[in-house]
Length: 379
Image 1 (cartoon, one colour):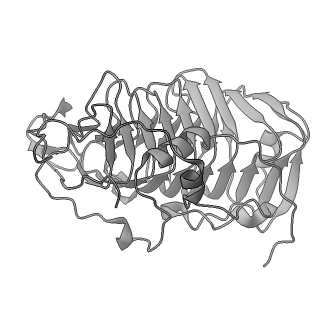
Image 2 (cartoon, rainbow, N blue to C red; image 1 turned 30 degrees about the vertical axis):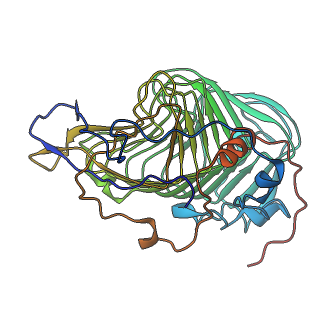
């Protein structure tokens, strides 16, 4: 499968109660024991890029075609497909015609925008169940605070920008507690005081796709802290995303099962992906391009609230491409039993190549796509 250097899983136990880093042994790359093979950054031919089979080719054909089309763990998310269309007609933080006004309604809604511009949020905007927030056709930026998905289900968030969230514990999109069937697609997120996307407190069956993350430190957290061992139920898919010079957490995972595929992560400040307590991460055909920090995968030991021994998590790498001097950091012991095919049978994946890197660099995050025409919902 193209340039593909797989193998290797790990789950190391440690008797300290505090969080500590696990030092990896030598890497297993044949003749080059400490570095992944290097691939030259050649330019790509347009015809090769056009031949890439990327996901979701048909979701812009009509307004509600997004519903139920996510790949991965969030594949059941239908959003507001069975509701009426709600038009956001004002950039005000609240009141009739505002985004907040639509999101608090209890009935299913497909929310679209008749205006473009910035919505300054004075507090978290709570999203109720069976909502689609669809930014196609306009350019909407959320700032000040972020979205909160609390005890809700079947939410789709598409084609929005998030920038400049301020305050303690302010995330771009905060998913907790007990939320499920969530799809976040084609969003641009940067510069929040806490996380860009945080998924915690038993929230599960979530897909994050085609998003662009930049200008940030703690990018994505999956799993709150070691005391919340109920997070063992969590399952997240992250694919075709671009982590663009963000410092860490692409993602950082506790307890959850996470499938990463066809993402491009470059120039991280600490690490690319971190496996903490009991996490199981399947990294498949991703591109890791180091800057000053060369090691992509990191392991931290923590003690689950219901266990006596501390442990880290495990990472399986299949078909990943490590360039610009990147060292994988993979550990050699194997106790990871998670494979995505145990949970879903189909996903759109390409070998990790320079062609794919170019596409992800230019085609992730908010896009100037038209708002598709609506068709009546099928009940």
